[in-house]
Amino acid sequence: MGKEEKKEGKEKIILGIDPGTNVMGYGVILTEGKKYSLLQYGVIHLKKYESHELKLKKIFERITGLIEEFLPDAVALEAPFYGENVQSMLKLGRAQGVAMAAALAREIPITEYSPKKVKQSVTGNGNASKEQVAEMLKTLLKIQEIPKLLDATDALAVAVCHHFHEGRLQTRGRSEGWKAFLEENPDRIKP
Image (cartoon, rainbow, N blue to C red; front, side, top):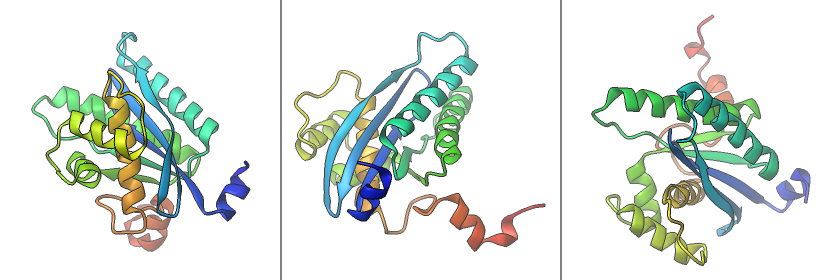
């Protein structure tokens, strides 16, 4: 099914990403109206790469590959939570930025959601554990077995959260993407 056919049937594909510098989760769902189904989920193993720069390159390549394979209509990312280790936050922010750049290079709208918003959307509890999120997704998406690395189900949760909130006010960003934001806010563009 080509992208044109998909648009006419109002089907949408959402790529959810749980950014990480050692393990990055991804999840892809297909939506049509209020229905949604699982296409693929997994993790990108990055721990084996020694330099942070090489990890960033691999993130870009793998996210670009997923975009080329699934042609998502939207990319949803979990926003980094603020911790005490500034170096870790910087690295996580770079990883998220590279994933965002891969989507923006293909002009795919991106939206960020806080970890609390994702958990609230999927389980009804913003303080749910990763295990509780995975169990709920197992039911919602009919997953046979929960994976060892919960980064994959975290990414699926971000995609499902985006589906639940699509068309509503977003926590950060808008579903139309940066292009629409810039068009609506020309005074924010510096020459």
